[in-house]
Image (cartoon, rainbow, N blue to C red; front, side, top):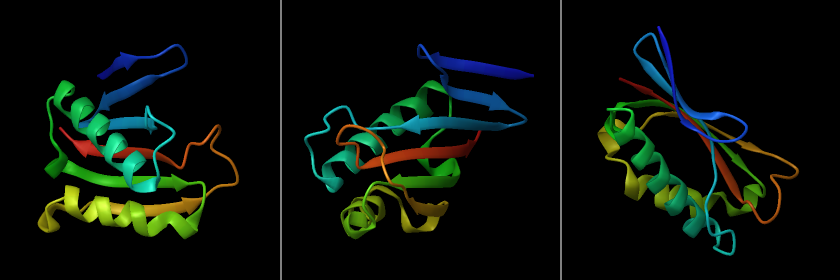
Amino acid sequence: MIERTIRTPIMHRAVEAHGFVFFGGIIADDLSLDMAGQTRQVLDKLESYLGEAGTNKERIVSATAYVADLNLKKGMNDVWTQWFDPQHLPARATLGVADLGDNVLLELVATAAK
C-alpha cells in the first residue's frame, strides 16, 4: 500500500510505502536567512512532517542535501550535528547545484523508517 500525505499543488511532501516514509524537497520559508538559519527551518519542517507521518528524527535512515554553494556547507553541518543525536545520524549525501531558485540555499530530501 502507498499512502500520500501533505499535498502541495505540485507534489506530496510525504509518501509512505513498504515501511518507509519518503519526504520530498523541503526548503526554508524565510529565504533571507543564512545557511544555518535555513538549515534550522528545513529541519524543523522535517520534524513536523515526521510527526504527521507517525515517525521521528531518530528513524531517518537517509538524507540528500542539495546546496546552492558548497562553501556554505559548514553552516549546514553545524546545525545538522546539533539537531541529530550522534547515535542516530542518517546516511547523507551533499550535492552542490547551480541554482535552487530565489535565495534558496538548501533543499533536503529524506527517508525515514515508519
